[in-house]
Image (spheres, rainbow, N blue to C red):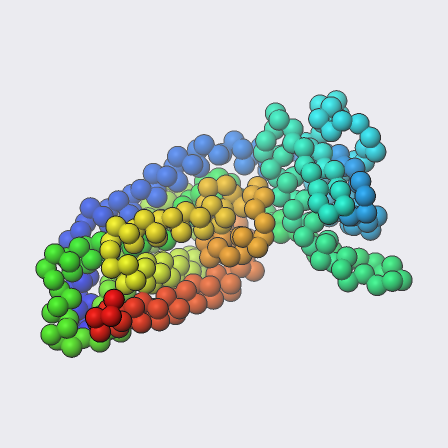
Amino acid sequence: MNRYLIKNNIKLLCRSWFNILLFIIMPVILVLCLSSAFDSLMKKYEETDMTAGYRAEGDGITDEMIEAMREVAEDNNITFKEYPDGNPENLIRENNLSGFIIFKDDTYVIYEDKDNKALGHALEYFVNAFYENASAAVMGVETERAKITVEHPDFKPTIDSKDYYGIVEIIYFGWCAIVAGAGIFLNEKKYKIRKRYQVANLSPLKEYLGKFIPIALVASLGTVIAAILTVILLGVHWGNLLLSACILALSVSAATAFGVMIYNITDNLIATIIIMFAIVWIMGFWGGTFETYLFSSHPMILKNISPIYHINRALTEISCMGHSDFTRSAILYSGLIILVSSFVAVIAGSIRKRGTV
């Protein structure tokens, strides 16, 4: 019965060719627009060395941290110069600085060069990454003033806008996989198919798998086709193709499980799409879909909450380096979402079948 249900639902999805076509074409169009719009910004950052001023006020940052910051900055083509006094905005203008940082007791303030936002965002990212590492390191300093060991911030080889947006927008649209399954849900309501499931005594697990597997397969195939189109039409580099395809398919499967879970809870397709899109937009906003994580100043705790951030980091770093420290977390995160969402979806389906919802 379940094999028959999966096969029929796949056929049903394939008849909704317009939804699938949009699912494939829309991300490619968005990639084309964004990669062109942000091409000059990312090139400007890649090709320009930075000089920034700083000032320490209070005891929030130690001499050891300042020295470590200067050393790590030099490795990333950033030069820091100390200015004990003076107006930051005037100092930026008079000394042709990319930005100015004032370290205070428990925080810092960054002044950007208004004529070069790209370098300002890059500086903000660097300081944010360094400050988190240095703050953690200073907690372990012993009384004998042991030398602070600061991890290198999460600076990676640069990736151009075409490759970056060619990857992250495909991931983002993959998380809208529930749209590809609209045909199943609409026909279920239209033809009262759920009553037939009850007559056939189909278990909630089999009913869930009958939706999850077809949607995951069709959405994954559509996402991979969209990725192939970015390679053919735009020349996007995906690095290790097999590994990237596996992570991408697992990401779409996680999105499918999450979407089916919401549908089983709400029992309403419109509500499911609205809730799903809102959650995915927030995860994409934190995860670098709209503002590249190279320039993003969102707190790391928010980025780490977003599965899209881990998947973005994994696939973009595989593209430009051939490997990524985020590969494992991207796979584990997606797998955990599939397991938890599937469990909740089956429970919700079971409750509804008993007529208590």
